[in-house]
Length: 358
Ligand code: COI
Image (tube, rainbow, N blue to C red; front, side, top):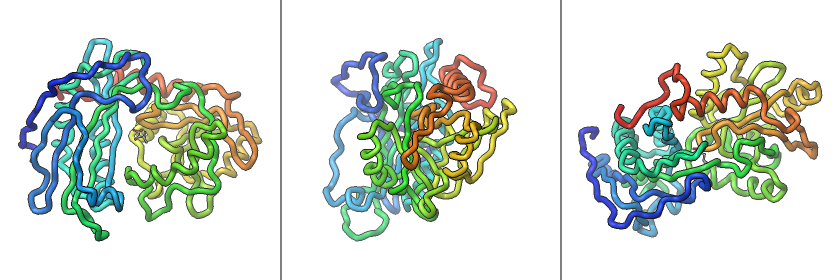
C-alpha cells in the first residue's frame, strides 16, 4: 500500500491566488486534490493527485443517506525561511483511523496518508499564504460511496484531501470571543459518536449554533448529555479554564473530541510547570469560581481556532465576564508559543514539526 506511487495529473487552468491578508476561513481552494479509492476485497487503490474539481457520485451513495463519513483538519505553515511546516500530522492520521473504526470505515495506512499530504502540499506550495496568522488548511475526509439504501457499512469509499488557504476561524481574530452555555440541546453522549470526527456531530450542532449566533455569540459551550452540568467542549474546539492558578480541562470521557491542540496545550503547560489537570468539571463549579473571583481565564484550543480566548460566558440568564473580557496571560503565552513553533520562529522542544521532506 505505502509502496503505491501517487500519479499526478496537472491542471491546465491555474486559479488566481487570493490576497493573503484578506483570507477568511475555508472558502478558497487550491488547484489540485488527492483521491484514493477503496473497494471491499481490493483495499485502498489508485492514489492520485488530480485537478480540483466536482466529484460525480451516484445519488444512492450511502454517505448522502446515513452519513457514514469522517474528516480531519490540520495546517501547513510558511516559515520566514520559505519552508513549509506541518504540525503533528501523525496525530491527525491516528485520529482519522480511530474515527474510521468508530464509523465502520476501513482504516488507511498512516504512512500513505502522510505521504499523500506531503506530496499534495509540496505540489501546491505556492498556495501556502504568507500573511501573519494565515496557513494552508488541510482537510482529509472519507465518504461512503456504495449505491445502496440498506443501513449497513458501505463496501466502497473515497478518501479525498483538499487544501484551503485560511485566515482566522473567528471574525474576532485572536481577540476574545463570547460563548453561550447550551442548556437545551446536547452534542453527544457517552457511547455515541462524540469522540469521532464525523459529520453528524457537526450537523446536529447547527441548531444551537444558529440560535446563539443570532444573539451575538460566536459558539456554544456544550454540556454533558445526561445531567447537562458537566463541561464537554465548544463548537469547534476543546475548552480550558484557569481557576485559582490551575488550568483545568474536561477529562476525555468518550464524548469529547481528543484534540491535537488540546494535547499540545497540556504538554506545554506541564513543561512550564503551570498546574494543570484533566478532570470532570461542572458549570456550577465554574460559576462558583466566578463568584469567588478565582475564574481567571478561559480559552478554546483547536487546529482551526488555535488558542481562542473566551471573554464572556452566558449561562442561565447571566453574563460572566472573564478577565474583564481581555486575553489572559496564559492564553497569550500559549498562543505565542504554539504559533511560534508552528511558524518555525521558536524552538520545538517536543519535535512536533515535520517538513515536507521528512
Ligand atoms: C479543526 O479545528 O480543524 C476542525 O476540524 C474544526 C472544524 C469544525 C472547523
